[in-house]
Length: 309
Ligand SMILES: Nc1nc2c(c(=O)[nH]1)N[C@@H](CN(C=O)c1ccc(C(=O)N[C@@H](CCC(=O)O)C(=O)O)cc1)CN2
Image (cartoon, rainbow, N blue to C red; front, top):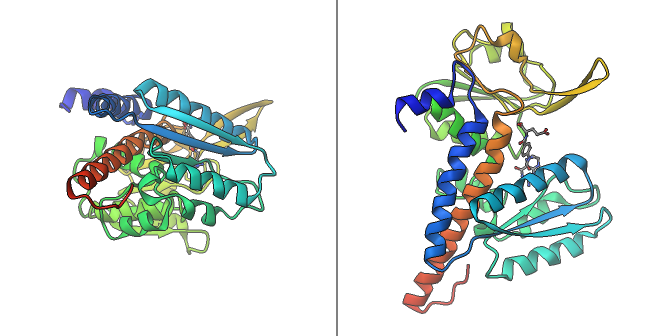
């Protein structure tokens, strides 16, 4: 990418997740065409249990983006009171279906279903969310595995404003399995010095003030104010919080965007920052999963071994 494009995608200080995700999606569309030319049609299975309104929107958007880039999708909508056993047997059948290369189970799952058991049931090579312990472990060892979409999207955004993060102090606020922990692993891989801050950390404000890169993923509306941020810091806001004000609902991040604006070197907005990247990286993972499975099948054809994807 030339510097002019880079400037357009990160206008001023605002890191434009919509524009950068569009670029990722156009790369993915190209990779899909290449796979199709080799006789492979990438296909993503999307499983939604229950009727959580936000999850329904995210799933709809995932299906739309898949169609945009030429990825086929199969949808499985299960009722709220689905048993764990039924869900596990659906995953088992998707694992065995050679036409499906990616499996995504939308989170959160209804109460009573063991989330970890379900995620562990997905074959690691089809785990386009990167949540299986084999992929989580591989990520922490720095191996090339399918990575969780939100943290890998954050890394793409960071690379737009900072080509070399080596030696920078990155502070990640929030230690969830789907964002905080894998984000810390990816920043470590980029040679940052990483501090992972959580609800039991002491003096969170002072820890944030030390950050060259600050990643906020706590789910507390506008918690991070100007006097939490070091001047010149790069801020990535993963929070998506709906707040009521004057009778209407608006979406805000974990960072008080207007308040920190003058201090930061660059910042992602909410909406239009990390959110669209999560979906673009899911498409990218689906293509990667399809490429890996195609390579395995071709290898098996050559050496006659029986390992199946
Ligand atoms: N199986 C998964 N479940 C969940 C994941 C995930 O990565 N895999 N992440 C979140 C939800 N999520 C994707 O599933 C997601 C959240 C937000 C957005 C997004 O584009 N947000 C927009 C705002 C949209 C709105 O109005 O709500 C933005 O920030 O611009 C995309 C995907 C939990 N579950």
